[in-house]
Length: 84
Length: 247
Length: 201
View 1 (cartoon, each protein chain N blue to C red):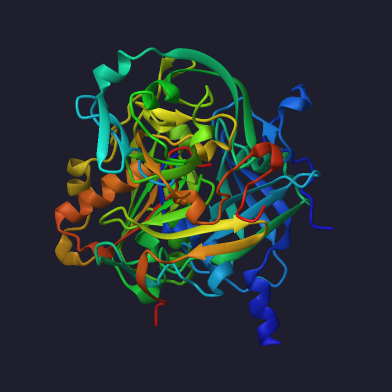
View 2: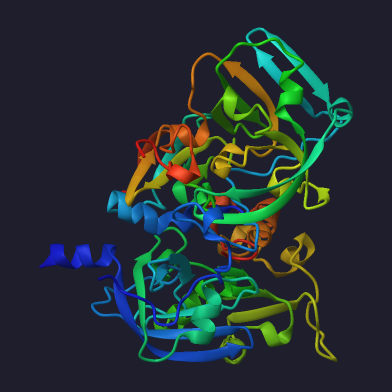
């Protein structure tokens, strides 16, 4: 299964953040690259949803659906700002 | 009142299928009646969710094929090994319910306020959100120049062919490339979109065109890299990947 | 009662399977879904090694050395935490016992490490006594990169996320340190028969 991009998790992000997040700007905690979430590399076919930095491949965000609750790990992002 | 409206938009709701329209042997457009639809922007998508009697669920996303102001519609390609697309293209019928949420997306969107000229490059079903942009431009009475470069396997696989042929003329250019099979006498392009084809078709970088590239991941990456190599600033190249075979 | 999509059944599921072979909450599939948390690595075989890391010590095998070890063909059922199970899958691999025999160790746990950075943790008794292999052939063919080739860990009695793709070694550990999915909420052990999907199950 090919990797997708952050557009593919627009709905998931809307559910978690109650806001449009594909245009949110994230800073990769791994390499410092700054990009909108729409440009992240996204893997959907897994035990969880993984978004990776397009510059360095490190994990930005992981979402696991644990018995109906979405558990979000954002440690791979040193910042995440919704668009103004 | 307003708060209730916002909540509605963020959650799953059941729409009713109004019509299922044949586009190509593998592709259908599903026109929906969505209660309290808040409106959408060209390029946005819907999340669709199917639930079987035993509770088994499958979820997919589909770009909205219609322009803002038109009834909500999605265009679905039936994938060989698909789980959801065969249901949507072969089982679903008028009157059925379809659970969805949306509209979703704020990045891969275009409206006249975003300017142009427009360079729209689609591979296979990647043409769907681009068609919404074209229809939106038309309905808004906008006259920004637009070039659509549309890559398909064959002429029979070209979605919206009549509509696109009718739309072309004046500042609207529709360029097809047929990668696997061409009809006799075909004088158009007959190969995958490569840097040579991009060089021919794309606006030169100093036109400051807004580029939207959509389709399978490998197609999008080749084209986006190609545009940047031509001199397009990355911020002018917006991408939406569908994956090689969908889900 | 939530909405039900008229006429939707999902992928055809093999319901003739012996129910005793299907753990709770699973369905049997004919396919072999590819699930991934990252890009598929493509390490050239001449650079590939498998190692057992034991504190400061490391025992490594090159691909040739690894392939010269005795291997066996096994037929096992596999169970993915995303609910699909596949019965009677055939693999060829080197038993983890064969690899661990070469190293003196007393560690209670291992952490499998892989190209691309994936890790998963296991108690040592779950990878010994014929329970685990480093597999390089699936269904009679060299293991495809999208399924973990050139070699992956194979631990069929646990959920398949423990069968780490693109495995490059086992680090012997005193602590049961959570690996990739375990860190993000999945169960530390992962027994499909007790439906141990998530931490706390």
